[in-house]
Length: 502
Image (cartoon, rainbow, N blue to C red):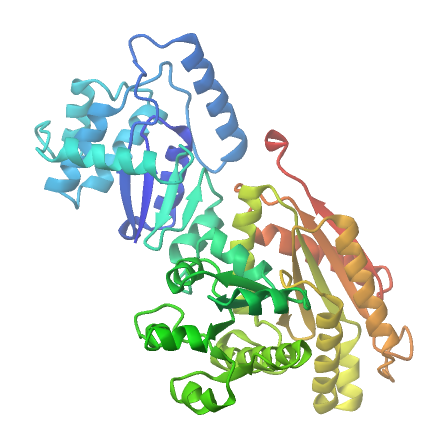
């Protein structure tokens, strides 16, 4: 179930209503109507209000050519219409979607004044309701929605979609974006949590041990050490940025009768499954530390190099375990993301980049004449080749923010967060060169002795009016050009913002 905050006199909300309606999401949506501009009056439409209406109408004509809409001759106040709709939602919920559609169409298609009680009565009659009655709870419900919309991080924008997990989709959205947001049944994350998860380095939480924190963070910059003054602070932060390891001070926890590690093992704590290490000053405490549930210990008198080496080893083992538990998201042959998990993360990245006005680059990679390779050497050798090429691609893409996936067969895809054309082209060329220089023999290639790859690049400026699939199709189109032009090369295309959004 999602909630949509909207107003009946907003053309963007009208389009969003039509798109949700066309995708048959009625049972998944709770409509929460608010007054976006409560001062409007159909009898006295100010020049400023009419100018805003014209601008919004013209923008809809550009952005939503799939929806039929007519420009009204006046600006309308929607309070009575909203209260009547809430009343119908309470008294006759099965009819509410029909009445809602009638209200939207009355203003945006027929140009009727839906602030008029006569118009409202006629619309109610059209859906089988004989009287215009306002439910006693209608006002309080509308006020509650209004206050929530004003208090939460909606930036006063409508339409605004919110999931049960608090995720938000603001403004008019492409139909594919809406479908992805509504039907997404996988792990739900807030935008900030997703950015943190994708962009963070190996994050190590150190609780109440400032000396150890300073010692480690000054000597290793490949890991992100974060110091917390209390367990509560760690738990609050972990909601959006969970660490990969937790280090506790044994002496400090001993003074608290080991309450800290007990709390961390509580099944109701979100970070209960994150490996916990104890830092010790005395060797004789080692046995007790393990019995309390620590996965490893760090001796404080050891060299910094040994401490860091042990932490890296624990990180590696943690990642291996995580990969095993997430095997449904991994392509078993290559170890890369599979197509399903890539699609899931890519669509979320698209929404983030759209809102934050960041570039999102895609690189499609295809092994040249791979069918010839399989036919000549057999599928076992073909599988080995796929593994080798996937490893070369992964090694060429360094940032933790980049997604690398097997797209299907001998084709791979890379999504590069906040990456421009020059950067994407450099990465594509690095992949091409690394594969060629690996000198994997290809006895049946028409273009050389070794395995090569062709690449297609699309550097996109994501926008709500674009489907995320558009950039993938353009990257695939650029890949096709590379093949047509002789292979073992890359070509690029650019997906700019719509002209009205530049």
